[in-house]
Structures are given as structure tokens and as C-alpha cells.
Length: 470
Picture (cartoon, one colour):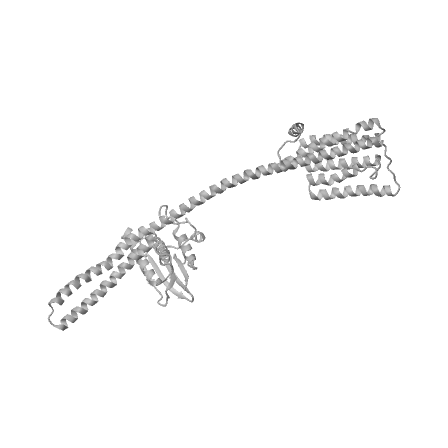
């Protein structure tokens, strides 16, 4: 095997189109060398017996077999060399059968013909194998038909040496089979080794992908928290301002109620006491009303900051819009007290209560309102005479509820419309946003089996619509 290895190193040179291309060239070199030795083994028969009729074909066949390794070294395509090899076998066997008794007295040579399609299948493919199988069978059939019709192919070799020839043929067949099995065994081992290496690489890549996925999930969670904290920060100032109004009312009505109680204590007539009691009752109702207002604001804040309940509940969307409009407007004014904006609220009284996760839909409204208010504020900075306007509307359309936020801040450019809901995409200046607000809002609305749409910009306006099933 070391001899063949050295021969392969000399004759078989790259580049190779894969492992099988290398093995085919090595196998062809080995087979051609063995075949040339097999042919040269008949030279004693040519000298000892009157076997000169086979001498030319044996010489040409040996020369062809010796030539093939050098042609392989010259990078001649292995498929072309395989056809050359098979053709040499075919012509040599035809001549040998003609001088050794045809197909009846010489069984070995017809068997060699059957190897031709096997070689073709190994080196060139199925179609060539079928063609050479037909050629081999036709060759045997032609010899058989000729002999059946009285044409004799007289053996020109002593039977004793004919047996020697057949023995050499058997040895040659065994060597060829051994070579083919050896090559396939090497290919199997190589494939197994590669498969093992690939499995190891896949396991490593799988671990790396899992680590990357875990890291990505952690980053996403962090970004979502940042987005939530950013909106929470904007809300804080708005909540402080918004809660101050009901607290002022509570304080004022409490003071008035305390005075009424003092008057009630010194009142003489029953009529005077009834009037004072009525006024006191009205004040208490006002205190309760504004206390509930403050309580609602605080609860909204807590829902937004802590996540609240993820359960669906029947919600008054008109009231929800009112709360978040006030919060968003006061929040932006807390950072820019000079900013003012006309906010139009047009709510449909026919709107039914809708089953939603209140905190999530509130976050959607807050994102849309913040974007609208920031858009008109930026335009006002560029155009001092500009009159900012944000319009928030609700409507009941058949089986759907629609909430709309429209602003005249300049609209969304056409080339950005398709990307507006992509994660991390933002038109705000660097550091002003995470680019997750609209993406999260889109996912929330989808989870509610609804739609978040951006209407076509007209006259410098942008309108976002939240459409939910009623």
C-alpha cells in the first residue's frame, strides 16, 4: 500500500473538486497500474507459445494503461480517462476472445466485459454505465451468434496456459474488487470523520446561538424596560401637575366644609341648619369626586409603572383617552413650559365598553400622544408662527372601535412609512428615543386582535388609528 501511496502522491495532483474527485483519480491510477501489470503477465505466453496474434493488442493495452497515470497528472478530466480505459479493455478483450476460442471456451474474458459498466458507473455516472452495459452485452451476443452460425474462433494457446491466463484474470478481478472496496472504506471513514467533526461544530454553534439568543432576550428586556422608564419619566411631571388640580379642589372644599360645620353649630333655626347641611353635602360630594379623580390618576400611574394586571377587563376608552391626553400634555409641558398646543377631543358617546388590558392600551395611547406632541413641538421650534394642533377622536364603526391621534407636525415621509413600525427604527434625534415605542404598540394592538395603522399624510398631518374589535 505504501507503493500505491507514493504513486498517488506523484500522479494525483490538485486542485480537487471534493473528496470523491480525489479518490476517483487515485483509484483510476491504481487500476490502470494493476491492469498494465496484468497485461504484461501475458508476455511469457507470447514468447513460449505461438501467441503472436495477441501480441499487438497486449502491447497497446499495456501502453495505454501505463499512459493513464501520466494523463491524470496532466489534469485530463477523470471521466474522459475512464472512457479511454474502458474502450481499451473492450478492444483488448475482443481481440483476446478471437484468438482464445470465443465465448464458449473462454469464460473469463466475457466476464471482464461485464466489468465495463461497473467501471463506468464508478467514474462517470449511471447513463454511461447503461451505455457500456449495452455494448458489453451486444459484444457477447455477437460472438455467441457468430459461433452458433458455424464461425469458429480457434484457440491459439495451449489449454494449460489458457488456465494460467484465467488464473491471472481471477487475480486481477480480485485486486480490482479489493481496490474498489478499499476506496469506499476510506470514503466511509472520511465521511464518518467529517460527520463527527460537523456534529462537534454544530454543537458548538448551537451553544453559541443559544448564548446569543439568551443575550438578545436579555437586551430586548432591558430595552423594553428603558422604553417603559422613558415614558414613565415623561409621565411623572404630568402626573404631578394633573394631580395638583383635584388636590386643590379637595383642600378648598375641605376648608369651606370646616367653616360650614362651624356655622352649623351656632345656627338657631331649623331652616338655616337645613341650608347649611345641603351646602355641606354638596361640598362632601365635590371632595369625593375630586378624590376619586386623584385616585384614578395615581392608579393609572401605578398601572403604567408596575405593569398592572394582565387580565382583560371592560374599559371605557373615552375616559382612558381623556386621562392619557392630560397626562401626556402636562408631561411635555413640564419639560418645556413655553410650549402650548391646541388639543381637540372628539369622543363618540355611542362607544361601548371594550374588553382590553387597560395598562397596555394606555401605553399605546401614551406613545402615540407623545409622538404627536413632540412632532408639533419640533415644528413650532422651526416655525415660530406655527399653531400646533393635536386631535384625539374615538368612533364606533360597526363591530369595531377606532381611536385616532392626528397631529399637524409635518407628517411621515413616504420613504419611511414602511419602516415606521420596525423595532429600533426612530426618526427622533440620537439619544431621544429607543425606537421601540411604535413597535411595542403595534405588538400590543395585534395581541388584542386589532390593527395599528398610519393613514396617508395630507397637508402636513400624520394620523395613527388604533382599531379594536368591540
